[in-house]
Image (cartoon, rainbow, N blue to C red; front, side, top):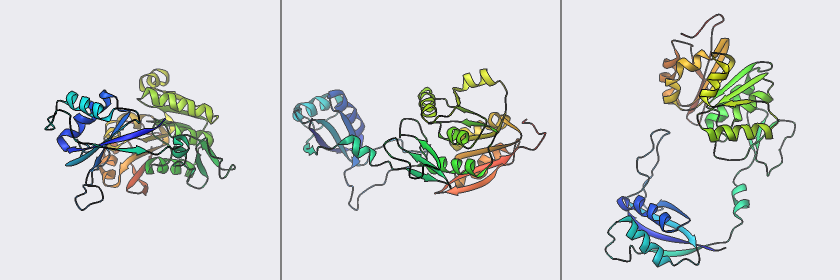
Amino acid sequence: MSWIEIVIEVSRDHAEALSDALIEAGALSVSVEDADEGTEAEQPLFGEPGMEPAEAAWERSRVVALASADVDSEALVAEAAAMSGLDFGKSSGPEFTTRPVAEQDWVRLTQSQFDPIHIGKNIWVVPSWHDAPDPSGLVLELDPGLAFGTGSHPTTRLCMEWLEAHALQGRTVLDYGCGSGILAMVAKKLGAAKVAGVDIDPQAIESARHNAVRNHCEIDYWLPEEFSAVTGSGSFDVVVANILSSPLKLMAPMLAARVAPGGMLVLSGILARQADEVAAAYAPFITMSVWAEHEGWIALSGQLGQGAGSQ
């Protein structure tokens, strides 16, 4: 099957409404780009996690719609223009151009973008279409998917390196905000006796369970309500949470309460400038300090005193 791209340049105020209308009119997908990309007028558009721009568009936006090559482009654009309710100055809608999309082996092209990832001393995250570069290492077979966590993000890498650097043999581990389940699987493969993972997203739990079976790891994954019902107030030797600073601060009493006396707490998903405020949120329960930093992200860790309990 052949495809074309329909390219329309519009103002910022028109980009979102026109994009939605093009999908409704039959476009297979729509993206928005900076129409001034590559010129002195190009506008960077980005933000930190949790602080993304409210409107992902540029002053001069280029709306690119993917459609089948046999589509009536004029009719599709005219229908989208009418559905959007926007005034483009003529009944047929905005001016547009089309360009062919070269035939590609899309599966192979996508797979070529994901190579094995080497983390720490001996950990390899390997997509299913690759062989492990070092079969004797700690190998996780994991394909990119909907759930966060493939080892490519600095926060995931930091947590994996922490787990590798600490003795887990025979210990209990909780991965809170488990995403793909990657941290729980690393802990299990490093010898942890019992491992549990928790996430608020049912799709992440389904993905994590699938990944655990694929990697021959016996791990319990739960939604928060299920986890509380099954484990009560049970604690763990190691609790790791790779989320973001705001939810980590809110969850300080709960996460600290899950750490057994003498146990360790590891937090990531934290920008370096946020380290002090996150550590302060945990100060009433456990003293946290920066364990390592990578690409502007940090991991905090702390140990609960023997005989201590969370307040």
